[in-house]
Length: 134
Image (cartoon, rainbow, N blue to C red; front, side):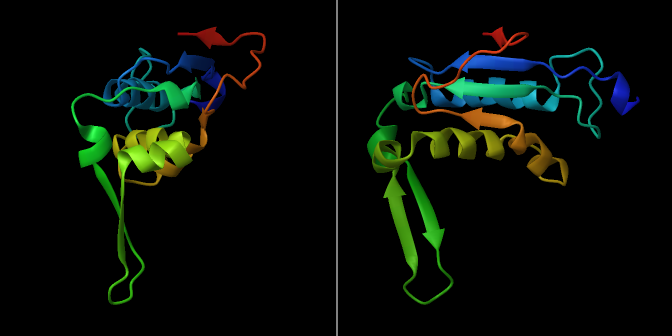
């Protein structure tokens, strides 16, 4: 497998009215290259992904109130928690990026894969020639 033989495409995914987890698995598979016949688990064979309309994503059940994100500063009493609803109001792109990052392998390739992901809260991406819309 030679790096110069790989052709990287750019996929554009509209996240409006899609479920968070299903969208994240689809994006993670494209980033890793699992949709290609030339997939190798220890190489970067994946494509670039642009997600638009991140603020219009859906979640099932009562996850907007029940799902929590935790942050610990390292100091006593430094644990803070935020619900999914509050985080979606502030930064919906962060929610999708965190979900996708959790589905990528926990090794040196994870940072390479996550750099190939762009997320826009609205429809702010201009399509270029050769982009594929999903």
